[in-house]
Length: 473
Ligand code: SF4
Image (cartoon, rainbow, N blue to C red; front, side):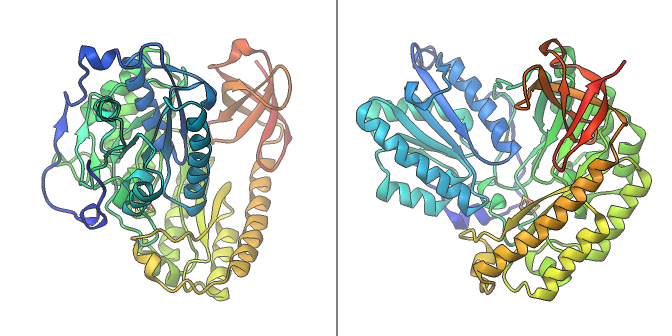
């Protein structure tokens, strides 16, 4: 049993990162473990977690498990969890309660949790105290070892925990079962060294480790050869890609090289304003297959709060970068993240956040109330904003943000835009949904034969969060 340790998770050394190309191995015995057995996996949180789930699914299918859509039909239930906010945390414990009931009627069901919550010392302590009827718990550094963890738990008939609090390596041979035939995620780096004071990610995902470019480019080229239309390059802070490598190669080089593979669409998330270079802006501007869409979290418009958050930029430098991007790439859409009610946020600080939203007129924003994460510096700050005020600020911010989302969408009326059609829309029969190059969701009346194609769409109606359109030749 290996359990997480907050002090170890916080450590950063100069030890080199190992690139491991043969760490994932399956014996013939492990391959038989899932024969005639079904698995169900539920994923919480960000795209990084969604992509980890694609790895977990491929590993389970290598072991001959098959996927089912309903938890009740599964022999193995896994929750791939998110630690970023308290409500995600509560949802997972709610689900664990449901699984307990199921296990009472089907005692042979194997149940486990993985992902970021599994990396938290407090969560694993709680599991050991209250939920030790679970079968497996494994962390973000242990995905490749899932077959052995499962086999150990089954052999011992008890809870097996394998969570490492380490800086981490790069494991290159984990298989993947992609959810889409048209859009794919590629991890370009793991972990984060920014240590924003409210964020748990540097503790749950280890130090920043960039993958070597040749592995990323090969993965991208294979996706092009398989007919994929879109690649999203994933990392907690993609603009810092390569800074930990010793080869003088960074995000702009990678973007250029991935663009050369000929893939139709390239996206990347998430950007930290600190590492966004002029050269990157140039590369995005000069390559038609790098999409004019940037998610650029601001978090607060107040310099005092940005400092308390440890964000390393000011509202002035953010605005300078924002305007530079807008000037260089006129059709770009920019979205953001904003936290309200951070410890110490006064009415004046909040007004400054509203003010920067008025200046930037973001295409949209993900807005959140500050959520205390145990072990982070912000959790020790005095949380002096009442819940009532936090809710009031969130509502006021959302009204403003929605207003600008609507205005940004209005500009699309009667325009013709390229849309990658992804699947059936909830908006009615014979309607598909897809996204523009600028990441606007569009509902289009057309048949399913167009799924997976990039088509030109004339926008006929505009709403706050989506557009309607029709295919035009
Ligand atoms: S850059 Fe992002 S992932 Fe890293 S600590 Fe800050 S908020 Fe968390």
